[in-house]
Length: 386
Image (cartoon, rainbow, N blue to C red):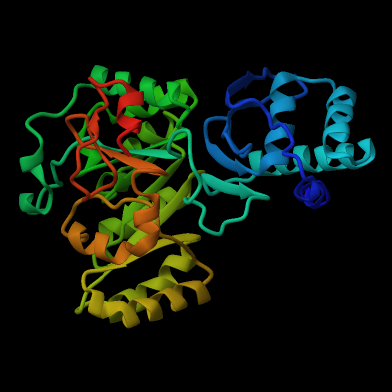
């Protein structure tokens, strides 16, 4: 889709004027031709980020971003086709055909259950975090560094924060995130489900039109009542820390897989558990899981980790590498950072930022360079320090 337009754009010597940089919103109603909630952010290079129904982030190339812009602006189709045909020196028939394809893909995405919360639409995925951005794609919010019962406190850097922000203070931060055009927030920790106001924070994201995710040990999701109290507030995706030897993990995973939410499981490879993880992969795949995150506690386990990754792919599991993992006994963060490699470094401080429980902003989890405080400092001042 859009390949003819793209090829012709690249042949034009003078740059084609892109859609104006900025954020655009559309709120459809039931019965409308577009009964969707759309938020579009257009970057200086013309690429776009489209949030659909506050649940899916679409990365768009330049022409797809222009189609989304005209949809949100409700430009008459004939007028939009004429403008783009003149701009790109192609026929209105080609424009109309690609526009129809774009709409059809949106409809498919909107009606696909358990969809990955981040999707690329005709945008090359080579070095996806190397572009100059007007704002990050995601903010990771560590709501607390408190841990679930039985987890050693020293596994989280509690010494770094003197207090946790209140619910109202987090509301202020989420409003700043939305105003900056950042499409996604991920709640992490510590263990974020220890915050009694977690459902309210998720609901705030839903109200603001921001995609929300949760990274958790998942112990509380063995309780369906608690699980529904979270999911019913509009949570869009969740990552569980995998503990294959713990029956509570499997119960939580089963409960989540029965619901309509995108689920990822994170497994940490150690020198003692390779066989255990190898045995867990078929069971994870059989549960209906599609997405897996893997790390290791020792760079010397690289070959074993690669073997595990290959087995996961053979089981039909997709690998995710750019989500933070909550501090816990299953995830020694210093080792997680070592194994993130260059991809982590390129995304950190650009594609995503990390907010500590007191509001301090870091380039990423474990990179302890404070860029400012998102509660008290202007967003523009923080972003300049990336």
